[in-house]
Structures are given as C-alpha cells and as structure tokens.
Amino acid sequence: MEYIRDLAILLLVAKFLSVVGRHFHFPEVVGEILAGLLVGPCVLGLVQDTTFVDEMAEIGVIMLMFEAGLGTDMNRLKKTGLKAMLIACGGVFIPMFLGTVLYMAFYGFGPVFSETFMKGLFIGTIMTATSVSITVAVLKEMNVLSGEVGTTITSAAIIDDVIGIIVLTVVIGLQSGDIEIGNIILKTVAFFAIAIGLGFVIFHLFQWLDDKYTHTRRITISGVVYCLIMSYIAEEYFGVADITGAYVAGVILCNLHDSSYIERRVDISSYMFFAPVFFASIGLKTSFAHMDLRLLLFGIAFVVVAMAGKIIGCGGVAKIMGFDGNESMKIGVGMMTRGEVALITAQKGLAVGLLTPDFFTPVILLILCSSIVTPILLKYLFSKSMDGAQPATASTSGKGD
Image: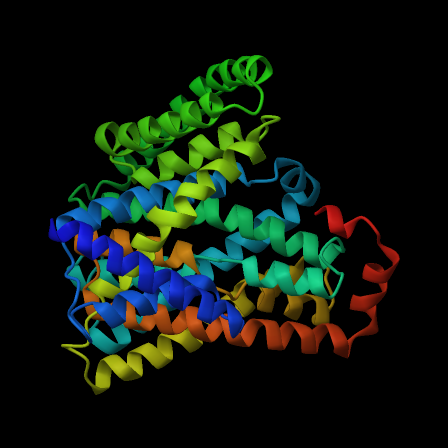
C-alpha cells in the first residue's frame, strides 16, 4: 500500500507549493516540480520514482495535451494565417538548430544519427516548445491581447506547438532505430491523414451526441475515451508519440459547442490529480548526482540560448514579415516562455533514452527564468512604445479573447 502513501504525499506537497508559487507570481507547475524535488531522492527521500507514479504521470501528460487541443482557437489560426505560420516556423527551427549545436559544443560533435548528434537534436527539440500562458496574462493585464501583436503571439504559439509535436515525433522515430527519414515521415503523415479523415466522422458523431446530451457527463466521458484510444493507436500502430494522438483528439473536438465544457470537466481531474503527479514526477526524476561544472555551465548556456533563440527566430521572421523593430521584439519576447510542453518533451526524451535525469535541471531552470524575465521585458517594451498601448485602449473586444 506504499503507493497510496506516496500519492498522498505527492498531492499534498505539490498543491501546497503550487499555491505558494502562485502567491509569489510563479507558474503553479514550478511549485509542483519543486514538490517532487523536495520529497524525492534529491532531498528528503520520502517518495521514490516507481512504475506506478510513471503510469499516473503518463495519464497526466495525455490529459494535458488533450486539454491543449480542446483549447485550440481555429478561428484565430485562420485570421493570422501566413504570418503566424512563418513566425512559428522560425521559433521552432532556429532554437532547434542552436540547441543541437550548443549540446555538441559541450559534449562533442558527432556524425549525423550518432548518439551525440541525436541527444543534441533532442536538446534542440526541447527548446522549440513555447508556453504563452504567462504572456497571455500580461497582455490581458495591459489590455493589448486583441491587438495585432497579441493575436500574432497567441496564434504563433498554437502553430508552434503543432510543429513542435511533429518534430518530436520524427526525432523519437529516428531514435527508435528507423533512420529512414522517409519512413518516419510516411508513418507520421499516414497517422495524421487517417486521424483527420476519421476525425470528420468522429466530429459529426460527437456533434450529434452534443446536441442530444448537451452538458452531460457522457459527452465528457466519450471525449476522454476518444483521447485515450487516439493516444494508444498513435504510439502502438504508427510509432507516433501518444501525446500527439491526445492533442489531435482535442483539436478534432475543439469546435464542438461543448468543447469548453469538456475541457473544464477534464481539467477538474487533471488539476486535482493527474497533472500534479506528472509535474511532481519530473522533480522525482531530477538528479544532481552527476552535476559538475560542465553541466552547470551548460545549464546557464541552455537558458540563454533557448530564450535568445525565440527572439532571433520569431522576432527575426516578424521583422521580415513587416512588423517594425519594437513589435518584432515584443513577438520574440512573448514567445520565450517555456512550461508544461517543454517538460512533456523532456519526459519523452527520458523514456526513449535521449535524455538523462540530470538534464531536467537545465529545463526547470529555463522554465523559472523565462517565467520571471518574460513579463518584465514585455511590460518594458509595451510601456516604451505608445503605439503598443493605443490599439488596446481603443479595443473593447480583447476581453472576449
């Protein structure tokens, strides 16, 4: 019965520290990660990283990505179109390149598909993730969320996540031993084609169910079942990460009338149970046993390069697309924050052997630093330019976003 005791300790400490973190304006996930560090082998040793905790954490990951898919705003994606797509591409591939080079600069260069190259590529993959929840909160506070810059940031972040998941799928496919990129792309394309094709049928089935049983538990339960099935099929039959299947399931259902209802109901179990276990499990896995000067220096460089990569990638493309210098900087800074997607990616890397536990420390450091630095820089950039504030005060529709 030790697993019950472990869960009780994890949930209690995780929720307590998440409340403390929120009080000091940190993301709640930071407190939950620190809870895992505190009660885990690194400090007190009260809870061990067991198979049971890993399985609960995996469900937490799937639920988080399903919620992310449900929260996708397809209309916003259509509005921003090409600009947001290109900015997102810049925000994925520039950090990915810089991360790969950074890892190999510290740990040695190797030929393509070598162990060193693959680990470097995965470090770059972690850098592609963007979490704009903090950015959105700042933009709302300054009443500029509905402006062109605010809309571009949020839309680019959505597209960034989609591209990042595809990149993660390809990199994991390469690690599995299938070095034929064509085969990996073919399997990935086949999964998305079948998922989208069947998605039209599934969507209409859920639409009928939604009309017949509006705001009932059966629509939520059916959605969760669909999410789990998609997660299983993605990994078992296509070699695609299970979180990809969960995310696609959410996107397919995001236009239902009850999509926000499903999201809220799923969030209850996720917020209270599965998500805290997942984030705390990151802390349990984090190890300082192999921490040395090189890893410490790598961690510092990792944070700097990851944040600079978004400014260069997203801000640079924004400048090319016609935004002025100040607006481009706002977009680049707004895309700097990292959160749960970076942690989910790191977790996947650990599962397939592309990452070791000691490298969770730089990832956690990145989340902390980007969460603190981004709001400060955004407020400075918007206060520096009256152009950023004028559209916001004139707009009254921002609250609806």
